[in-house]
Structures are given as structure tokens and as C-alpha cells.
Amino acid sequence: MFKVTAGDLKRSLFAAAVLSSIVIGAPALSAAAEPGNQITILYDAFGTDSAMTKDWGFSALVEVAGKRILFDTGDNAEILAANVKAKNVDLTKLDFVVLSHRHSDHMAGLSYVLSVNPTVKIYAPKEGFGIYGSSLPSSFYRKDNSLPPEMRYYGGKPPEIMTFGSAWPNARFELIDQTTEITPGITLIALISDAPGTKELKELSLAINTPDGLVLVVGCSHPGIERIVEAAASINPRIRMIAGGFHLVVAPDEAITKIVSSLKDRFKVESIAPGHCTGEPTFAALKQAFGDKYLYAGLGTSIPLGPNASSNVRRGEAPLLDDLATYRKLAARQDPFGVMRARNARLDARPGAKL
Ligand SMILES: [Zn+2]
Ligand SMILES: [Zn+2]
Image 1 (cartoon, rainbow, N blue to C red):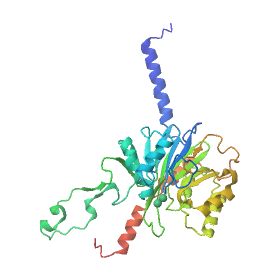
Image 2: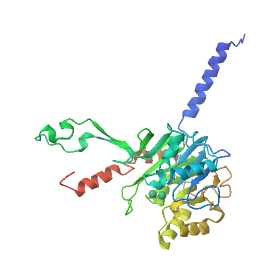
Image 3: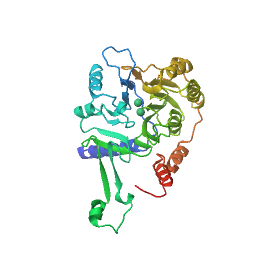
Image 4: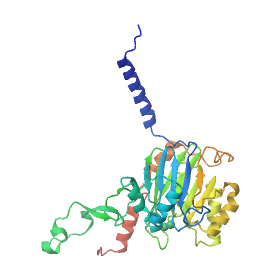
């Protein structure tokens, strides 16, 4: 007799659900790219959509693998609000927000985002004393027990962890201090700038690993677009697309030529959707180098991430790394955000350790 009771059915359904959740829960190497996946530019200083306001800054809605991610929030909350309305984008339904770095042209629209979605999770770089809030163990500062309590910090009894405020005290920040796969196939690449003017500035870039290669969204690329792409290539050497600001707005022609050829020939980036601080001469150089793989990304544009977006490009040109080897390489990397390196450099620079 094979009588199936409601209880049996429930149990077998439960077993199937457990099985499928195990499969889904296994470390996924890529996020599915589905039709309708796209990157919509909500904030930039060039574009053709007359219903939107052009302004210096960057914000993009990234829709991929069933996730809706707001990457950066532009320079002005009112302009972001108007542009979001013009594109009919619903910011109440977001999986998370990424703030690439602390510059106002990327984060000043956050107050609008929080006004419509106050509990959304926000990934931001972890900074020592920054606008996103932080903390430090009180052991960081030198003590002097010979002083009377009234001359000592916290009367000589500091809390174990000292916490520092945020410009948005009620926002749900999750601070990132090293490259992190925040959900299967979606990684925040954390790097630190070494360039004059932005030394020690931390920046997050968004890498989405799709079956057709990696989609990389960058804010300002202060750590250097080549360094960011190099880090992305260690996740998946096949870079399908890069969108965002490359920070070559004042770069001389030689530097532009070098970077364009590095993206094209060394990293074999398949298509490119530059915006924001990439720079006008760099737009021209990239357009010439990438031809029909240069994807216009002006304000209001939706760049499709459908499976056919890179169908004309031959596969297997980039060196393929064994996935396990890649993960081992990532796991073995010490101090990827350069925090310890920067701290040691500071300590070396002032042997007197005066604070
Ligand atoms: Zn910047
Ligand atoms: Zn910028």
C-alpha cells in the first residue's frame, strides 16, 4: 500500500525545501543575470533626458539577480528626489544602498533616500573618524597613571570601546573594512586611495558576478581604476562591463591612453559604460577603443544587463583561474583595505607618538 497522508506530503515537501535550501545556500559563484536586469543612471552631469536635472555627482539603480541596489546617492537630495520621480523609481523597495566613499557628490542625497526608506541597509567604508560613524578600542590612546583623574580622559576609566557619531545617527550602516562578498555573487571591493589629495580615502566598488562575467560599478575610482579592476579580476577574470566614474577628469592624454589600453588589452574588459568623473577626453578615447561596446550611460539611461549584452565577444580570452585557487588567494590576502599598513606608516612617521 502506498497511501500518502497529508503528514507524509508535508514531510516530503519539507525535505524538498530543506534540500533546495541547501543547494541555494551553497556558496554560489555567480548571481543569475535575468532579462530586465539593468543599471539606471539617476544622477550625473550629462545626459539627454529633459525631465531630469543634470548635476555633478553619481547615483545608479542596479537591478540584478533579483536585487535592487542603489549605488551612491548624488550630490543634492532635492535633485535626487526629482530625478528618482522622473524615472518612476521606487526607493522604498531596495535590498540595500552602497555609498562608495564619503565625498558629497556621492552621499549628499542620502537624506532623501532615508526620508522614503529610513530602515534600508547602507554599506559604507569603515573610516576612523568619519561621517558614517565608527568605533575604536579605548586602548588606542596612551595612558598616564600619574595624572589626577580630572586630567584624564573619562576620569581614567574609559569605556572598552569608544563609539563615534554619524551624520545620520538613525541610519542602518554596515561599515566595510575589507573586500567582502555580502551576498552570493555580489562583492564589495574595498580599496584605499594613495593619490595626492585623496590619500587614505577609502572607497567601495560593487562587483556582481554573473554567468556572463563580472559587472563592476565604480563611484569615483579614487584608488585607481586599474587597481579596482585588478581586484575584480581576482573574483572573475572575465570582466563583462564597467560602469561609473573612472576619475580621469583632469588626467593628461598619456595617462588616459595607458589606462584605456590596460582596460582593453590587459583586462580584456568587454564593454564599458563610463560616467561621472571619467572625463570628456576619456569618454572620447574609450569610445574609440571600444566602438559598439561603448555603452552610453548619460543621466536617465538604463543599461541592459541581459544575457545578450556581451554575446558578440569571444569567450576564453582572459586567463581562467581555478575558482578554489581564487578563493585561497583572497583568503590569504592580509590587510586588503590597507588599514594596518596606513596605521603603521603613521606610527613610523611620529616616533614620539604625540596625539
Ligand atoms: Zn570622490
Ligand atoms: Zn565623484
